[in-house]
Image (cartoon, rainbow, N blue to C red; front, side, top):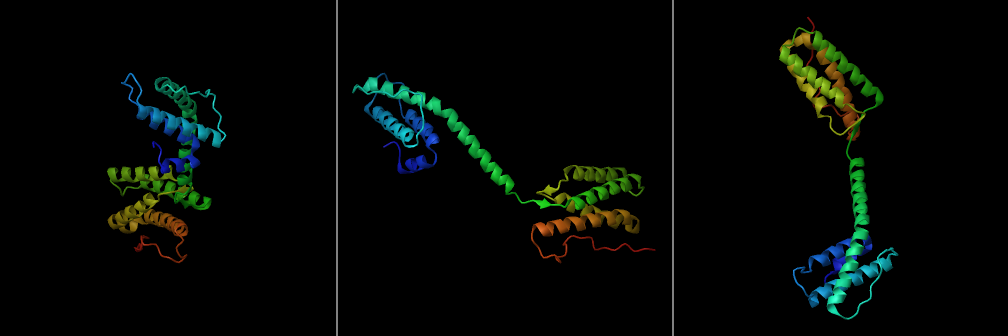
Length: 233
C-alpha cells in the first residue's frame, strides 16, 4: 500500500493538501525511462486515483477534471490515470499553496500576539522622552566629556529614543544607561548630578514597567538602581 494509516489520518484534517501530497508521492514512484508500464506502477496510479476520488466525494470538493473509465489495458489505463492525476494536481496545487500560506500566517499571527512585551503608560513614555531630550541637551552643552565619549553617549540616546514604543519586547538598552551613569558618576562625582538624576528617574520608570509586566510584588526593589549618592559641597 502506498498510503499508510498516518497519511490517511491526515486526510481528515487537510483534504486538499492530502490530494496534492498523494499525487506527488505517486508520481515519485513512476519510472519515466521505461516504454511500458509496470504492474507496480499501475497499482500506485490506481490506488492514488481511488484515494483522490474518495477525498473529492467525501469532502464535497469540486473538480473540473473529467473522470475516466478504465479499459483493462495496463498501458492505456496507466496513461489515463496519470493524465487524470496530473490535471487534478494542477487544479488543486494553487489551492494547497493558499492553504499553506494561511496556515503560516495564522501561526505567525499567534506567535507574534503571544510575544512577551513590556507596556509603558503614555505618561511614562512621554516622560522618558522628555528626560532623554534633557540628557542630550546636557551632554551637548557639557564640558566634562571627551569628544568620543560625548558622541558615544549621544548616539546611544538617539538610538534608544528611535526604538522607544509603548509596547517593547526588549528593554535592555534602558539598563545600559545605568551603566553609563555609573561611569559618569565615577569620573565626575558631584558634577555628574544632572545626568545621574535623569538616568535614575528613567530607570525608576523602566523598573516599574518591568516589575508590573513580570507580575512582581509592587515593593520589589530594583536590582540595578543607582544607589550612589551625590554629595553636595
